[in-house]
Length: 202
Image (cartoon, rainbow, N blue to C red; front, side, top):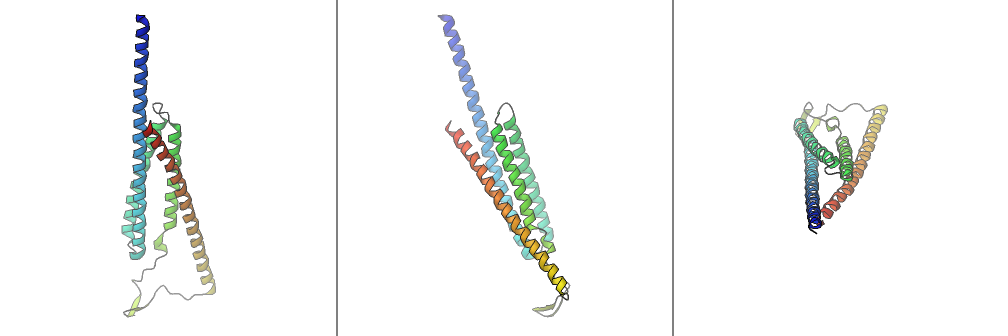
């Protein structure tokens, strides 16, 4: 009878250790997923900052400030991506063995990359579309002779109209692409939130 009690005691002890280990892993996964949502929030703030900076650039034409902002945003996005890749690697680790979560983070990373590419494409190179009137001559306070005016021929007008139409179409395509990427990202983020909710109820 004493041998039986020892075996039961050892088995109970092993089950308790296994439960503690599972609970610890669940908490670690939960913390990683919460950290991931924080990273996504940082990305959203960076996009907002980029949008504001672009709007200001379009008004003022301050290219140097806009280039500096783009550099800062690039560093922020690279940092976010690096952290998410580390999380993805952890989920693939045998200690966690959560390939499903690694694949989910990978899908979000792919959509974020696509979104950033399209946002930058949408912003385009605004300096190519802005005109600087520094070299124009001003005869009266509100009138000037624009050095950018050229004799418009039918061919030049057609060429410019085609270029504008091409730009407009590319812009519309980029906007649709951004919207599609945002929709896919939001769907994946909802899956992350469901996983968090499930882990919290365990």
